[in-house]
Length: 215
Ligand code: MG
Ligand code: ZN
Image (cartoon, rainbow, N blue to C red; front, side):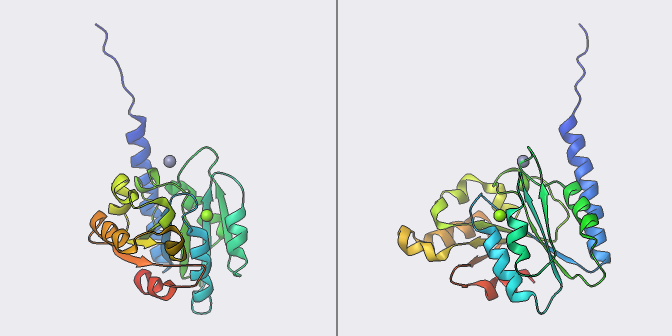
């Protein structure tokens, strides 16, 4: 019988991605830029939270924003209103950012010597963005009360591969009759090593606490 040849493209892609991610990290470290990545399902409040963080930090740090979405430039335009350099990556049919996206964005952004904080927003998705690193220093994953407390058990790697878990849109808790304590407990159980912070970008709550955790 003929031997069947198998080409392991996925493994090759992941290895290639890892190399680029390491190079990204090295570049950022050489330039003393701290890169924080924000992840979570679509509509979990990533962009609005980044907006409030950037507003709070823009006087103390030189910040830039890189946002990933399949199409459009909504998020970069929104963050751009804070007055920081903002760049949108359109991934086309790809449901996550890969290291090459960040590499290319860093080139496009032409990060000057004075940039010290980079906020990266991954594509809204609780699955594959957590499977591969792109070269950022810290990962912040958001879950809002409307998504349901089951998220913590249904998407284990999202929480295990994050440094900070944010319960976002805390202003919705009352309207939804959600149990914040239960969400906090489930978040902690999903990754006991992660810091858990509750925020409301709308009410500007938890922003300073989150800054303390991520910086
Ligand atoms: Mg967004
Ligand atoms: Zn994907």
